[in-house]
Image 1 (tube, rainbow, N blue to C red):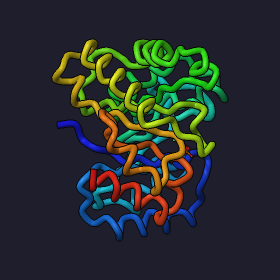
Image 2: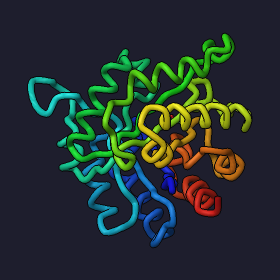
Image 3: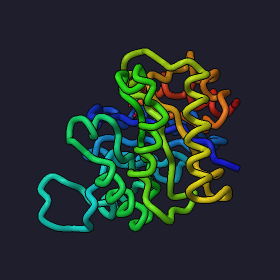
Image 4: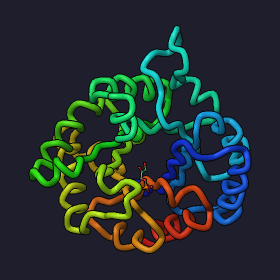
Amino acid sequence: MVRKLAAGNWKMNGTGASLAEAEALRAALPAPTVDVLICPPATLLSRLSDTLSGSAIATGGQDCHAAETGAHTGDISAAMLADAGASHVILGHSERRTDHGETDAEVRAKAKAAIAAGLTAVICVGETLAGREAANTLSIIGGQLAGSVPDLVSADRLVIAYEPVWAIGTGKVPTLHQIGEVHDFIRAELEKRFGVGVGRAVPILYGGSVKGANAAEIFAVSNVNGALVGGASLRAVDFLPIVEALQAS
Ligand code: 13P
């Protein structure tokens, strides 16, 4: 059985005051029946992990360097994330691919480092609007999967997040048919590459303008095993209905 995951990506949002949101989440979710993950900015990771320690809510980073240590000013290694309490790390988010020019090969190297450090890599893929309009969506996603996902992963060390770039922070959501088409394709690619056992057990998240109001219908789509949520993960009052919709799915 594939595990369901509700993941929040706080992006470059949040200071110490935001820990209260995590406290509220913790209080409202004493025993969630799905996996729940919050990925705060690096400055909050350690404090958030302490706040959520002993709860069922996990924490993760938003990026890591491919090297273990060294002269890389401003970067953070996977082992450092683990040391700060993280169990997961988001890699290859489209904002990093755009803002920092991250390539598939770099994402793959980072994912290898993350898995070696004991983290679960949440690898993001997604087409731009131009890519979709040119009817290239599946070939783009196939290329990103082939290039960004490292070999020899076990199912519990990998999560794939499908985030159409044009749906992130825009309020635009693909049709349920479009989401299902891409998720079925990702599942088939994972099974082809890793075999049915591993390929079927890797959670595939949808991300891009997920809210309480649309979560249930998205979670009903085939091969959607959860969500990677940006804006609606910042406040417990917005994130909770999404977690609840996943629990009910
Ligand atoms: P929004 O939920 O704000 O559209 O962001 C999605 C996202 O990029 C999560 O990683």
